Length: 285
Image (cartoon, rainbow, N blue to C red):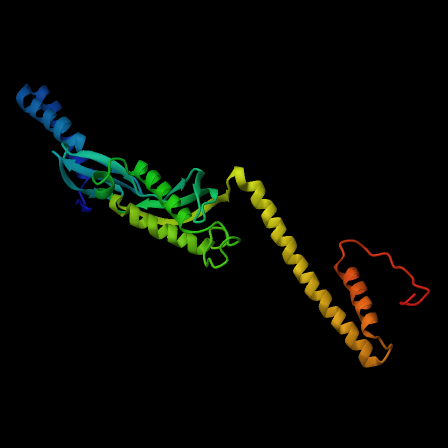
């Protein structure tokens, strides 16, 4: 396996000065009728010196190979001269975003969901990126999709069906992102890629079950709200009966208490405003 080897080549300004000197020498030789010397100067300058000049911009690198052998990588920005017979491949060292496409996959419980992720990545080992995989950008795309699919299969979308689930795709954003980042770093290590950040950018139920899941969520919310209303209403009824008994305002037998509890629960738990009914008789007739 090739590992990155950073090199510091000769300054390009020295080589440029030598090239200009050779050009001047060639011109002088042709003027003074020394064509052989002039030809040698031209060959040296245009074949051996000039093709070796290169410019490396900030956050870029040049991977050099000579006759099939890896020579090294230039990461320092500037103007340099290298062996003119080396093959130079530019590799960007800048951080880049991968906005993954929405894919349909089943979660842990088998529910079809739509999921996508945004990944921030950067080339760390240029030798691995060039020599260990055929196309490192395509490799990143394929491995990222595989990692997202695997992550979706590990956890349920939510805990409606699996109440014991500690991590869900919907609510465990930080833990899910950390696990996705770790898996991507493991998968992309061969290509010399470092994943800086990975987060889910889209998460939803698939279209064919989205309506049913929305109704289930609404029903769960209604049941939860009703439960809280009933608990509050029972507490208020208990408090009312206790205060009436404590203040000796009225003596209520069991039947009157039952009627009072029924009326209070209807008022407190009803969806609409209750219209009062005045009873001019007694409870018994």
